[in-house]
Length: 117
Image 1 (cartoon, rainbow, N blue to C red):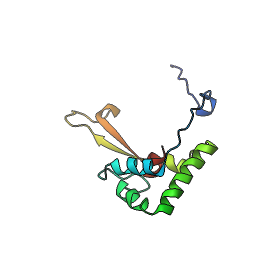
Image 2: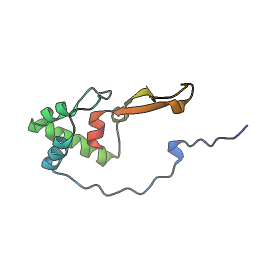
Image 3: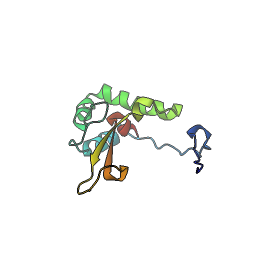
């Protein structure tokens, strides 16, 4: 039997931290406005259209920025932002579908998590 090395993320040595470049409200608005409204929903069920409406309210925009900076300052990425939905799609023109190579996986992440990242 072949041995398989399993790595636990907690045992991987930390890499040096990168300096975080701050961003302005306008820079965030510009990035969000460029996002495509036509994409599949992640587990949070938010679309970029929703986010574009939310950031029109200056208080909501400020809170989003505050949450982003809090995550960065604390060095903490909430597990909610890491949630995803995976869709399995059979690849076309396969003679048999009894192998994982016969399928394409598409992972949909939470929109808020993608935004903050």
